[in-house]
Image (cartoon, rainbow, N blue to C red; front, top):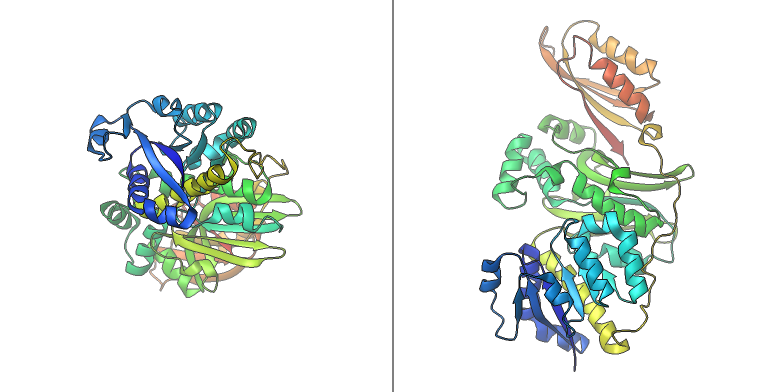
Length: 433
């Protein structure tokens, strides 16, 4: 039986999960594939972590990633550090040294894919990155191989387990955002500093990768309109349910005649849509294509075990190639995804329906004033809801609109929020499906 040797760089939650999974299921992997996958080296800057690894005297333990990269016996480098520095230099050096690379680093792939894929192609090695999007969901492999004969026109993704958990808690327990966030942190679903998740930036990194694979379109996370969930309140989820919607932090990519729209923001989505029932820390990706129709991939989006399964799946794919075709054989697929540089639509030009929640003083003429400003910017009202009268007090006024231009909506809300009868910044949530 042929052996393929692995070096893991980064022994955090996922790195330890990968190490343990290979150690525990190595014989099962060998039985299924006919290839023996062995971790022969690990690297981490924390010497206490290295000391705690039990792997026998033969296991290389080092604080220097380059020691593993330079090792002639290692076939695959697994980068699980995260971020850009020093991960980018490590990955590029590994590729230059003819090492195949597996990574779960969404930021690195979304921002530096062109340089990384170009180096991989030049050095005739693989870069696999399934775990960078969707945890255990095999969305990268599905789009890259299963759907490659079709033209994809729509991708919707619930790509962040932390935000999905928070929104689920608010919806089911009518608690505040801060209470739901604290619970997520207590359960280990949210970081001590949750900004990357709740701001939507994490989902934007992942959407940039899906956009590249689905549409051949280069898009930096900076190109993606991104809005977080921190202003969502229980009342918004109650209102959404009343009108037949749920609220999700949705990553959206849609191909249109005028160009590709890509955006991440809280979204009212129909209760009948497949994504509406995705709750807790689960992730899901909805794909619509010309031939495949509608498809949904669903599963655990984060956590040590689910993510490690995706990483090990990439390791096995490369290991089988090495064992059957040789370490230096030409890669059987095009790593240079740099296809289209088509037009990305400006968020201000996109026409969509909106949910608006105003915090306004209950007095005559307020609703008429709001409606007048909306009309000024060509925004048509579809539905209005107001709580029981509380004369002179601040009450929520909720309006659903027909399709309107984003740019016009932003101008209208800016003008409305300056009015003396509006006491808080208006909550604006876009509606999809």
